[in-house]
Image (tube, rainbow, N blue to C red; front, side, top):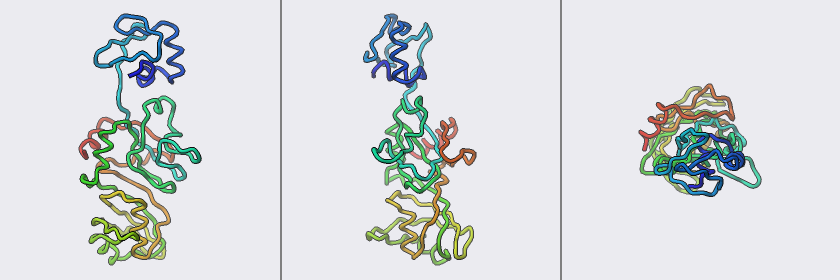
Length: 237
Protein backbone atom coordinates (compact mmCIF):
# COMPACT_ATOMS: atom_id res chain seq x y z
CA UNK A 1 0.00 0.00 0.00
CA UNK A 2 1.03 3.63 -0.36
CA UNK A 3 3.06 5.10 2.47
CA UNK A 4 0.75 8.10 2.90
CA UNK A 5 -2.29 5.81 3.28
CA UNK A 6 -0.52 3.71 5.88
CA UNK A 7 0.49 6.77 7.91
CA UNK A 8 -2.94 8.36 7.61
CA UNK A 9 -4.61 5.14 8.77
CA UNK A 10 -2.16 5.02 11.67
CA UNK A 11 -3.25 8.39 13.01
CA UNK A 12 -0.65 10.75 11.57
CA UNK A 13 -3.23 13.07 10.02
CA UNK A 14 -4.99 13.44 6.71
CA UNK A 15 -3.28 12.50 3.44
CA UNK A 16 -2.45 16.18 2.95
CA UNK A 17 -0.94 16.46 6.45
CA UNK A 18 1.01 13.24 5.94
CA UNK A 19 2.54 14.57 2.71
CA UNK A 20 3.77 17.64 4.60
CA UNK A 21 5.18 15.35 7.30
CA UNK A 22 7.04 13.28 4.72
CA UNK A 23 8.69 16.39 3.26
CA UNK A 24 10.31 17.11 6.62
CA UNK A 25 12.36 13.92 6.36
CA UNK A 26 11.23 12.37 9.65
CA UNK A 27 9.84 9.20 8.07
CA UNK A 28 12.08 6.19 7.53
CA UNK A 29 11.32 2.87 5.86
CA UNK A 30 13.77 0.15 6.86
CA UNK A 31 16.18 2.85 8.03
CA UNK A 32 16.01 4.93 4.84
CA UNK A 33 14.43 8.39 4.81
CA UNK A 34 11.47 8.42 2.44
CA UNK A 35 9.76 11.62 1.27
CA UNK A 36 7.68 10.15 -1.54
CA UNK A 37 4.03 9.71 -0.49
CA UNK A 38 3.51 7.20 -3.30
CA UNK A 39 6.20 4.86 -1.97
CA UNK A 40 4.70 1.39 -1.54
CA UNK A 41 5.23 -0.44 1.73
CA UNK A 42 4.16 -3.73 3.24
CA UNK A 43 3.23 -3.27 6.93
CA UNK A 44 4.01 -6.94 7.56
CA UNK A 45 7.49 -6.70 6.05
CA UNK A 46 8.77 -3.11 6.18
CA UNK A 47 9.69 -1.25 9.37
CA UNK A 48 8.26 2.27 9.23
CA UNK A 49 9.49 4.87 11.73
CA UNK A 50 8.26 8.43 12.33
CA UNK A 51 10.69 10.52 14.42
CA UNK A 52 12.21 7.23 15.62
CA UNK A 53 8.81 5.90 16.70
CA UNK A 54 7.74 2.56 15.25
CA UNK A 55 4.45 2.82 13.35
CA UNK A 56 1.98 0.12 14.32
CA UNK A 57 -0.28 -0.15 11.32
CA UNK A 58 -3.99 -0.65 11.75
CA UNK A 59 -5.85 -2.13 8.82
CA UNK A 60 -9.50 -2.15 9.80
CA UNK A 61 -11.93 0.22 11.49
CA UNK A 62 -15.30 -0.69 13.02
CA UNK A 63 -17.75 2.08 13.82
CA UNK A 64 -21.19 2.10 15.43
CA UNK A 65 -23.33 5.03 14.31
CA UNK A 66 -26.71 6.19 15.55
CA UNK A 67 -27.87 7.07 12.06
CA UNK A 68 -30.08 10.11 11.89
CA UNK A 69 -32.93 10.44 9.40
CA UNK A 70 -32.09 12.34 6.23
CA UNK A 71 -28.79 10.64 5.42
CA UNK A 72 -28.22 8.03 2.74
CA UNK A 73 -26.60 4.73 3.70
CA UNK A 74 -23.93 5.11 1.06
CA UNK A 75 -20.30 6.15 0.72
CA UNK A 76 -20.97 9.03 -1.65
CA UNK A 77 -23.73 10.78 -3.52
CA UNK A 78 -23.52 13.85 -5.72
CA UNK A 79 -26.85 15.28 -4.59
CA UNK A 80 -27.51 14.11 -1.03
CA UNK A 81 -25.53 13.82 2.21
CA UNK A 82 -24.41 10.34 3.22
CA UNK A 83 -23.48 8.69 6.50
CA UNK A 84 -19.80 8.80 5.47
CA UNK A 85 -19.99 12.58 4.97
CA UNK A 86 -20.46 13.13 8.72
CA UNK A 87 -17.40 11.09 9.75
CA UNK A 88 -14.26 12.79 11.07
CA UNK A 89 -11.44 13.02 8.54
CA UNK A 90 -9.25 10.60 10.51
CA UNK A 91 -11.99 7.98 10.18
CA UNK A 92 -12.74 8.73 6.53
CA UNK A 93 -9.09 7.89 5.79
CA UNK A 94 -9.94 4.23 6.38
CA UNK A 95 -12.56 4.44 3.61
CA UNK A 96 -15.33 2.74 5.64
CA UNK A 97 -18.70 1.86 4.15
CA UNK A 98 -22.07 1.05 5.74
CA UNK A 99 -22.81 -2.63 6.30
CA UNK A 100 -26.22 -2.98 4.76
CA UNK A 101 -28.54 -0.04 4.48
CA UNK A 102 -31.06 1.92 6.46
CA UNK A 103 -33.61 3.92 4.47
CA UNK A 104 -33.03 7.65 4.30
CA UNK A 105 -35.83 8.37 6.76
CA UNK A 106 -34.93 5.50 9.10
CA UNK A 107 -32.66 5.94 12.11
CA UNK A 108 -30.81 3.68 14.50
CA UNK A 109 -27.92 1.24 14.53
CA UNK A 110 -25.58 1.33 11.54
CA UNK A 111 -22.24 -0.46 11.38
CA UNK A 112 -19.52 1.05 9.20
CA UNK A 113 -16.26 -0.73 8.43
CA UNK A 114 -13.63 -1.25 5.74
CA UNK A 115 -13.51 -4.97 6.52
CA UNK A 116 -15.08 -6.29 3.34
CA UNK A 117 -14.94 -9.93 4.38
CA UNK A 118 -16.78 -9.26 7.64
CA UNK A 119 -19.40 -7.16 5.85
CA UNK A 120 -19.96 -9.87 3.25
CA UNK A 121 -20.49 -12.48 5.95
CA UNK A 122 -22.95 -10.31 7.87
CA UNK A 123 -24.97 -9.54 4.74
CA UNK A 124 -24.96 -13.04 3.30
CA UNK A 125 -28.56 -14.24 2.83
CA UNK A 126 -27.44 -17.68 4.00
CA UNK A 127 -26.49 -16.36 7.44
CA UNK A 128 -29.96 -15.04 8.38
CA UNK A 129 -28.48 -12.49 10.77
CA UNK A 130 -31.45 -11.15 12.80
CA UNK A 131 -32.17 -7.41 12.82
CA UNK A 132 -34.55 -5.90 15.36
CA UNK A 133 -36.47 -2.66 14.84
CA UNK A 134 -38.77 -0.46 16.88
CA UNK A 135 -41.60 1.11 14.90
CA UNK A 136 -44.74 3.16 15.25
CA UNK A 137 -47.61 2.05 13.05
CA UNK A 138 -50.60 3.95 11.74
CA UNK A 139 -53.25 1.37 12.53
CA UNK A 140 -54.08 -1.19 15.18
CA UNK A 141 -51.61 -4.07 15.20
CA UNK A 142 -53.31 -7.30 16.23
CA UNK A 143 -52.62 -10.90 17.15
CA UNK A 144 -53.60 -11.76 13.60
CA UNK A 145 -50.65 -9.66 12.36
CA UNK A 146 -48.32 -11.52 14.73
CA UNK A 147 -49.53 -14.81 13.29
CA UNK A 148 -49.20 -13.56 9.71
CA UNK A 149 -45.65 -12.33 10.25
CA UNK A 150 -44.74 -15.61 11.93
CA UNK A 151 -45.75 -17.43 8.75
CA UNK A 152 -44.23 -14.85 6.40
CA UNK A 153 -46.18 -12.37 4.28
CA UNK A 154 -46.37 -11.67 0.55
CA UNK A 155 -44.84 -8.34 -0.48
CA UNK A 156 -46.09 -6.11 -3.27
CA UNK A 157 -43.76 -7.76 -5.79
CA UNK A 158 -44.92 -11.27 -4.90
CA UNK A 159 -41.93 -12.12 -2.71
CA UNK A 160 -42.72 -14.35 0.27
CA UNK A 161 -40.79 -13.21 3.32
CA UNK A 162 -39.22 -15.53 5.81
CA UNK A 163 -40.92 -15.72 9.24
CA UNK A 164 -40.56 -12.59 11.38
CA UNK A 165 -41.09 -12.11 15.10
CA UNK A 166 -43.55 -9.30 15.86
CA UNK A 167 -44.09 -8.00 19.39
CA UNK A 168 -46.85 -5.51 20.22
CA UNK A 169 -45.73 -2.90 22.74
CA UNK A 170 -48.85 -0.80 22.52
CA UNK A 171 -51.86 -1.09 20.28
CA UNK A 172 -54.52 1.39 19.21
CA UNK A 173 -55.06 3.83 16.37
CA UNK A 174 -51.29 4.29 16.58
CA UNK A 175 -49.41 1.15 17.58
CA UNK A 176 -45.89 0.61 18.86
CA UNK A 177 -44.09 -2.61 18.00
CA UNK A 178 -40.77 -4.39 17.80
CA UNK A 179 -40.03 -6.66 14.88
CA UNK A 180 -37.13 -9.01 14.19
CA UNK A 181 -36.41 -10.02 10.61
CA UNK A 182 -33.64 -12.19 9.17
CA UNK A 183 -33.60 -10.67 5.69
CA UNK A 184 -32.76 -7.27 4.27
CA UNK A 185 -35.10 -6.68 1.36
CA UNK A 186 -35.62 -3.12 0.14
CA UNK A 187 -37.97 -1.27 2.55
CA UNK A 188 -38.82 -4.68 3.99
CA UNK A 189 -40.42 -3.71 7.32
CA UNK A 190 -42.50 -0.99 5.69
CA UNK A 191 -43.63 -3.33 2.91
CA UNK A 192 -44.48 -6.10 5.39
CA UNK A 193 -46.89 -3.79 7.20
CA UNK A 194 -48.29 -2.58 3.89
CA UNK A 195 -49.07 -6.23 3.18
CA UNK A 196 -51.38 -6.29 6.23
CA UNK A 197 -52.93 -2.91 5.47
CA UNK A 198 -50.93 -0.70 7.81
CA UNK A 199 -48.33 2.07 7.48
CA UNK A 200 -44.99 2.49 9.27
CA UNK A 201 -44.67 6.10 10.44
CA UNK A 202 -41.37 5.78 12.35
CA UNK A 203 -38.65 3.15 12.16
CA UNK A 204 -35.50 2.65 14.23
CA UNK A 205 -33.05 -0.26 14.13
CA UNK A 206 -32.13 -1.44 17.60
CA UNK A 207 -29.81 -4.35 16.91
CA UNK A 208 -28.03 -6.40 14.28
CA UNK A 209 -27.19 -9.91 15.42
CA UNK A 210 -25.81 -9.57 18.94
CA UNK A 211 -24.72 -5.96 18.39
CA UNK A 212 -27.09 -3.51 20.10
CA UNK A 213 -27.34 0.23 19.56
CA UNK A 214 -25.62 2.26 22.27
CA UNK A 215 -28.56 4.41 23.37
CA UNK A 216 -26.17 7.01 24.84
CA UNK A 217 -25.22 7.94 21.27
CA UNK A 218 -27.18 10.94 20.08
CA UNK A 219 -28.52 11.02 16.53
CA UNK A 220 -25.56 11.50 14.19
CA UNK A 221 -22.99 10.43 16.78
CA UNK A 222 -20.75 7.40 16.38
CA UNK A 223 -17.90 5.60 18.10
CA UNK A 224 -15.59 2.67 17.57
CA UNK A 225 -16.80 -0.74 18.64
CA UNK A 226 -15.41 -2.03 21.92
CA UNK A 227 -13.41 -5.26 21.81
CA UNK A 228 -16.41 -7.06 23.31
CA UNK A 229 -18.78 -5.68 20.68
CA UNK A 230 -16.39 -6.59 17.88
CA UNK A 231 -16.29 -10.17 19.14
CA UNK A 232 -20.11 -10.25 19.14
CA UNK A 233 -20.13 -9.03 15.54
CA UNK A 234 -17.60 -11.62 14.47
CA UNK A 235 -19.67 -14.37 16.10
CA UNK A 236 -22.36 -13.60 13.53
CA UNK A 237 -20.02 -14.46 10.64
